[in-house]
Length: 152
Image (tube, one colour):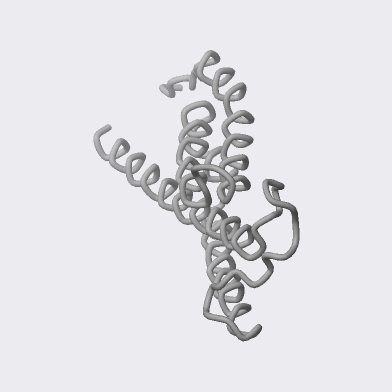
């Protein structure tokens, strides 16, 4: 009977729920348009920390862990690395150098898909960085949570 009731901050939860879709769309925009404008896979992927932090601030650590599974993120990061190397070897397979743009003849200049292999490598880097930085953010939040439990 000595348990404290858990009070969720409604303002923080509603604010995070309103900002979260905008943040995800912005991240995808930066990743997908990286070959046409400043930004790219790395910059968009690093912004994933904001999404993880928003979910943690608005809904708590337990919901964050359920939403972003560390195991799934870690596995996806490995597949993104393999896919990046496969795209790099595509240049070698077509008689060019490693990671050379060999699909540049597809698409018109300025279109979303206009840079051939560069577009796919950019998206792959974005997925790799999203999953890598996201899993690091989850680990850091877990350490902070464990330290707070030790202080109580």
